[in-house]
Image 1 (cartoon, helix red, strand yellow):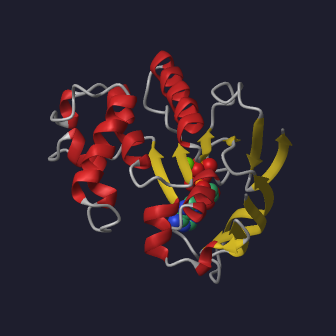
Image 2: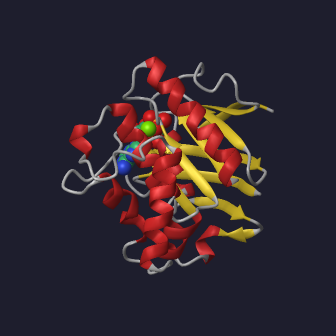
Length: 223
Ligand SMILES: Nc1ncnc2c1ncn2[C@@H]1O[C@H](COP(=O)(O)OP(=O)(O)O)[C@@H](O)[C@H]1O
Ligand SMILES: [Mg+2]
């Protein structure tokens, strides 16, 4: 269970121009569920994901995973093992091959023996449909394929949570739907909790659990 309790975040907090980005957010997500977080630009979606992803620890309120405050985890371990992230811009490294990109998150951690990590990376790449592209460079791939690489990379360490920030934002609608289907399929197979953030309410139409944000507040929750 992920529990978000009274979560507030204000940028430039002690200045003349504070920017309140999240205001008293509360929600819970059972482990393994898929949740859509919908809001227009500026509603606080990325701010929320940065906090859940362990990148930003300057906030008020609490985020608990299995009853444990995420601030109590070692930040590096939390970011390497607990969460994986997929971004709108894919953020692949152009000089590395597809396989090397997928391995990046576990290169410094020594979580897995090398042969085992390569096996897992190859397995994930086959599952996202890129078994035959492992030694290609990102610039030889389409946008949809690049996002598939990024998804495999997000899952390489076996995270409990996968955070997807506008994962289809740079894709045409058909490719976007395929990426959504792939994410849902991997959620079933891998069992990680999946958070999909988007400004496009149609994209998450099919999800049972949705949270609508507006100006940093939860406008509505459907489940
Ligand atoms: N580093 C920052 N410093 C100051 N204000 C910020 C910063 N990052 C985001 N904001 C502001 O916080 C609000 C929420 O932004 P963000 O979380 O990026 O929204 P979204 O991802 O939904 O578009 C916006 O008003 C934005 O301008
Ligand atoms: Mg954003």
